[in-house]
Length: 381
Image (cartoon, rainbow, N blue to C red):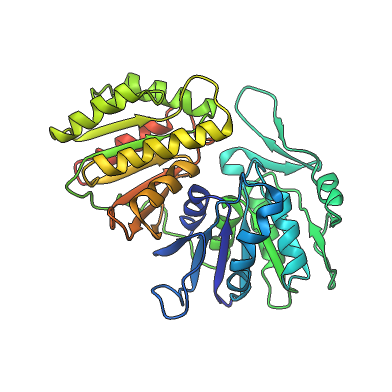
């Protein structure tokens, strides 16, 4: 199979890193736009750009997508990473890219069976043990039809502009079958749209996947290990509860309380080796209020913390805020040490080179935070 070059466009930073982790080696992940010609990583065979487009107003999408369109089409394969719960502007972004890009059709395969996300009966479903499956978002064909895009259940056999192929995917074997159908030299130009599940299947198909079991944590720097999250997802609150019970520490700030943040920062100045910040307030806030509070608290952390030895970050907005506040221009992704977690080093800014492990707030078993902390506490890290 001809490897070619792969360009991946994501709508948030944790999703970008989770997708990059499907591939072996080191992948550059750029924030907002790709590098200009001649800059580092411009010619990388696999690269990712994360735009902050998940929650912006749909009418503003062209301002974010137009600057990356030529880059997305410059590779041999264009991949639009979508949220496996189909949150935000998933459908609107795909519609804009299909209309304005040089694509004959699109493959829409958002399933991620390993994380309990499947696509069947014209819906995206969330599967959890012991409870009935739950539908994510609206019926797929109806949503694309409302955007004036036609859909089909089988791969288009001829050039069919603006046709969206929506295959049934219940297992990783289904994903491998879809990728084998789509990834052929004779295939017409196609916009691949999927979650990290589709990226893993593509990596398997092209022999680009990391060797299972060999990924290890990145060497930790001299500073403290810093855990930061600000997601409102219920699954994350349960994970925090399990973590506090399993690994009680003194240096923890909960529910975005300023006084507790001050106390943890004071402990950081005295040499505390682990610092945990839960920046998700318990009281109801408007999206604008929540964003303003998160921006202010992240700016404070970056200004007052010593340079971390490593970061553990849950939530795409949280990670993007830390990168912007520290001046990072991107991240260099490495293979994941745990499913669902991105692994990378920050590029540029005051925290240049800091190892960072990141994940969406909507994922993971109840013990997921416990397990990532356990992995990163091992003596060889």
